[in-house]
Amino acid sequence: MNHDMADGRIPEADHPAIDVDVQKARDESKQIVLSLTRFGLTSPTDENGSPTPEYCSWYRWWDSYEHSITPEQFKQLERVLESKSDLSAWRPEGSWKLS
Image (cartoon, rainbow, N blue to C red; front, side, top):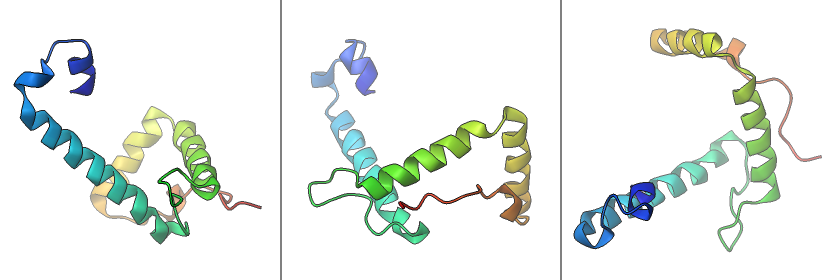
């Protein structure tokens, strides 16, 4: 919606409900990032709300893993998730921990 508003396809002034949706999405994104502590991150953000070096390290590690999976592997992973089978074979190798 932000993209369409920036292009003028959705007039922002005519749709106050969009602000509510955008704020809800921001709140949900923040909650998702904060939940990363369950994966061993001590704090995804610093006191100013900026990503910590630890989070950036984790993100680069995860992003690299995610981009290494082929479309066919994603389909296989989807089937494993749907069947609620063991996911241990799909875990990324290595460590994201800062040295």
